[in-house]
Image (cartoon, rainbow, N blue to C red; front, side, top):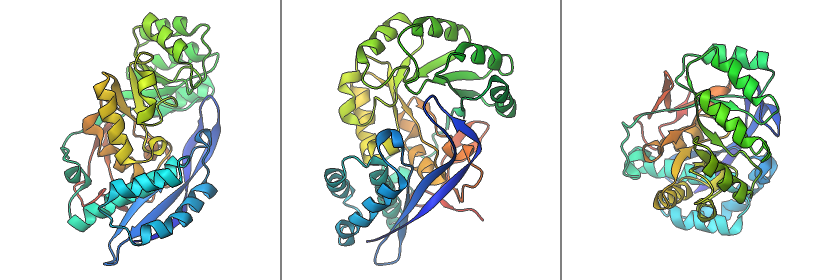
Length: 339
C-alpha cells in the first residue's frame, strides 16, 4: 500500500470555545492508502494539543509509516495497528486516521459497507447531540435559537456562569441538555451545580474535573442523580478499570483511542464493567464522523456533530436529519466527495 496525505483546514461556523481553548479553524489531515489495484481507502486525523498532538507531528508519523505499510496486507488490520501503536504510542489521532483508512479500503476491496465487515446493523439510527460552545450568554442564546428544535443539545460549560447560562438557554428550548465541563470544574460547588442542573433537564455531565481526579469523581457520582461520564480520563481500554467506581459511563473518541479497533475494545471492556457508553468526536469532517457512526448501534449515546459545526466539509457520508444519524449504503465508510 502507498500512503499519501494532505491538510484539511476546517472553518468553524461559530468560534468554538471550551473551558481551556478557543478556535475558529480546526487543522486536520486526510490520509489515503492505495493498494496495487488502485483501490484507495480514506481516513482523517483530528489532532488535539490536550493529548500532545499537532498537524506537523501527525504528518511526520505518516511519513515514518510508509515503510511499514508498503508490503502490508490491508486485511491484517490488527497486526498493522498493533505495530503502529508500538512505534507511535503517543500519536492516537495519526493512528486513528490509518486505522480508518484500512477499514475503508477493506470494505471497498470486498465491495461491502464497513457495518457489514463489523457484523453490525446498518439500519440502526440514533439521535446525536448538537454542541453549543462556550460564549457570552447573549451569543449562546443566539446559537440556541438556530437549533432550538433539535432534540438533544450538548452545552459546553466550565465557567462561573454555568447555571445562569443553562437557565437562559432553557427559556428558549425544550431540548434535552447534556453538559460538558472539559475538566473545567473544581470540587467545590460541583454537587450544588448538578442538583440545579437536574432541575433544568440535564441528562448527563462529561468530565467535570481535571484528569486523574478519580476520588472526586466517585464522591460526586454518589451524591447526584445525573450520570457522570469520563471523557479526557477515558483514553483507551486500559483507562477503563480505574474508572469503574468513579463514573457511570465513558465517552469514546476514535482520535483519543487510535481508531476503530481500539474503540471496539473499549466498548466491550466498558460493557463488561457495567458502564454506559457514548461515542463522541472532535471537530472533524464527514470522513471520521462517518467512521465513528458505524459503531453507533453498540453505544447508548451519540455525540457525532463535528462535521455539522464546520462550513467547508468537502465530504459527505453519514446523514443528519432532525437530529438523527443514519449510515450511507455504500462500500467501505460510504464517504464520497461533495458534488
